[in-house]
Length: 183
Image (cartoon, rainbow, N blue to C red; front, side, top):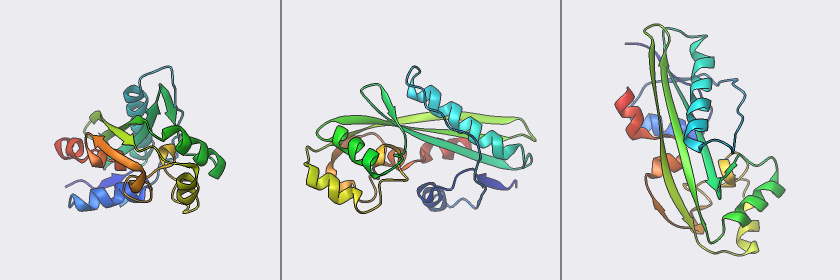
């Protein structure tokens, strides 16, 4: 059986992959990620996942490499991870009382046998209306800086969220149903 590599340092992706019972190692990708509001988030997310997986697969051609990317979109604007707490605050204020789409892509590559599987899944996340005090309290936890659009559904943002339409693991950062099919 081929070695499986996760091309990501995301602790959430590691947890989901471990929960699937997959034995893997982590080799972070050095691929430069660039969002592009002029193209659909599914297209951009798949392109980024392929870029990340390819970067690692070039170094480990015999391995099965998993790349993934999560893009949060609101009103056609793709939100990255915030650069600082001020940007996290702005993003969370934007999300209050509205919904956004979370698109998480997946690329599974094995250079040795020419394998390339790609896909993406989107879940809609509905936020409750909340005030600046709720935003401030969440930003102060430090949970916002390493997450697209400054929130983690599985952590501190849970009280701010009303409901979702779609898959929870897509919002966390790895569409496990797609990965299961690909593997």
